[in-house]
Image (cartoon, rainbow over all chains, first blue to last red; front, side):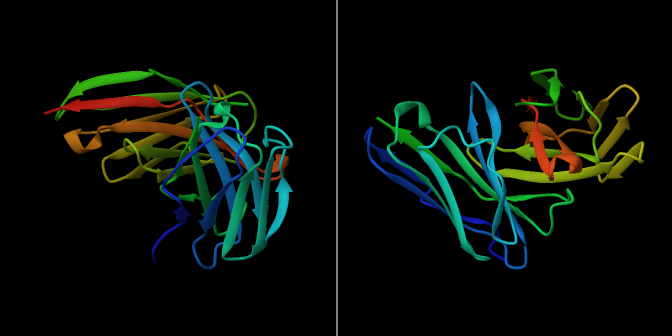
Length: 114
Length: 112
């Protein structure tokens, strides 16, 4: 099993540009989570899906952020337009169900908005 | 918002010593989990303890949970330089739709 796969590993973009982060969860896992990690705020849960349906997006900072999960093997997190304060490491994680067993995290996407 | 608070924020020990990290939380939980994060990498799940359990072991790891004090501790025995990493506790709340909320983490440095 290749684990949770995120792409790209690093992204540098200019303020105002659209950024799309991608995630492939572990096959068979039916819950997917997007987290953001910064020094100031630590790990924040942005949104999570169960069986491809968004369950809770209360952590999404503002309307510039959107996430989709069109099928069980793919999810995207989009920021449009991007701002320097969006610079962070974005992690995707998946689990077999949402009753709280351990999550498997991807290696993250380090986003820098200049 | 962050739920768990970890103590200490940073810990430096010699190889072979034991490392203890503590986590406190605010509300009732279904389970508590510990994760490790090496520099520049994703988080790795270490161990999960459910709210009706008091102690759990996995290799050199020992986790305790005191729901009356809303606290947990992670003990790493006979530490190795390879244990150098950040350690996070995370609390799971099923009554909020199933969220895993992370603390700020403890940065552990094990010197050879």
